[in-house]
Image (tube, rainbow, N blue to C red; front, side, top):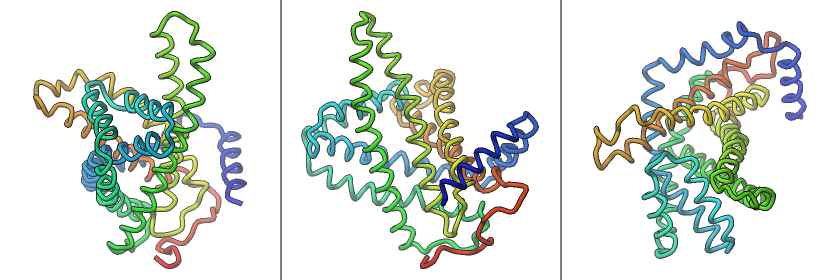
Length: 304
């Protein structure tokens, strides 16, 4: 079973240890990969479409929590996650999302179609990149890629909903345990730390789905699984670094009223580079010295 293979791979890594030289050998090829010109072309395309997908994706999630589930706590949790994961200055975006969810139900249907359209723009260049790093010579045709993009968008939405619903009682438990402390800033800090840490398995699960399902060929779980976890951790670390260094970019002075758009787009671009880094890491970073059960290069998944 695949979970036994993953367990064996992690046991091997644990026994062998990650020495400094081993860590360099593991990461250096994927770091070099980021300096290829086409990688940045992929990253810009992914970032632009991810930026366009953010509003409709979040709108649908808020509408599900508010109008379908009638769960106010889950609705508030989505808003709290937005405050945690969006850079400072995004309050206007969150405010507009709340207004749309409360006042215009018809726009939620339009958001579904917009999400379907923009998700294809995210996964189309990503599939090409994944096929190349794995050595699969053929890409899916446009219609098949559209179908796969819809499936992955649906999987991502379900994972996001499960993540939100799981965090809601956890957040209530934190408030119950330490809510008696008079310092509101301390409670906010603890809640933020919990959300940041809990985001890692959520991101890793989405990365795993993308790395495993999207390539047009069979890929081994034992490589994809640790790469997805590493990329999830790296995304959280990268986000913290980006937010801390954001004042140095002076987007407000350069872009004026478009500073928020530039901030979100640059973060989407950085996130796309991390995503592609993890894709290359899954194909080349966790290769065993002994034979692994990998499909021959160029073999494709049945029926695609």
